[in-house]
Image 1 (tube, helix red, strand yellow):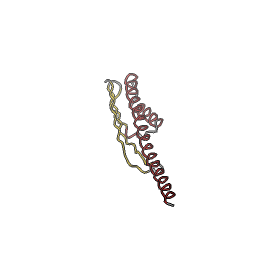
Image 2: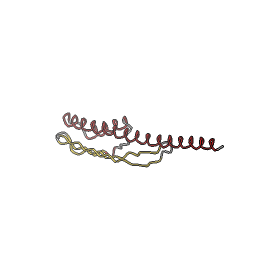
Image 3: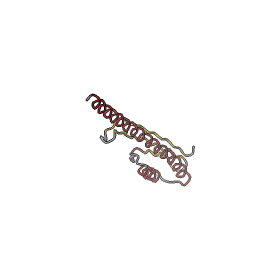
Image 4: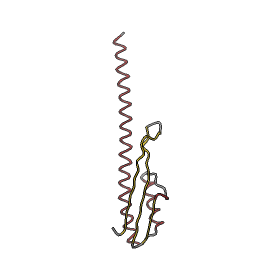
Length: 123
């Protein structure tokens, strides 16, 4: 009887450790995914500011291009979080947004990561 209880206790312990491992791997995956998408967004921001400065694009064009890329990368960037100053020969763009890292299955935020990007033309 004692060996059956010990076997059940070991199985429960293993199940709990597997759940804890799943939880941490999911959080790490979510954090890495968000960070990589932000890196791509930052690179795209630098590229768009350079192109917009060279081509004389309007601030509205810059904002729209950045919003499309943010949507593509599943980043929660809104139009009011993109500040475009100047134009043509002197362009300055600031983007600030937050991403929630959530607990799997519960969709409860446990961590909020802030991202800020600044790009200028000419550099």
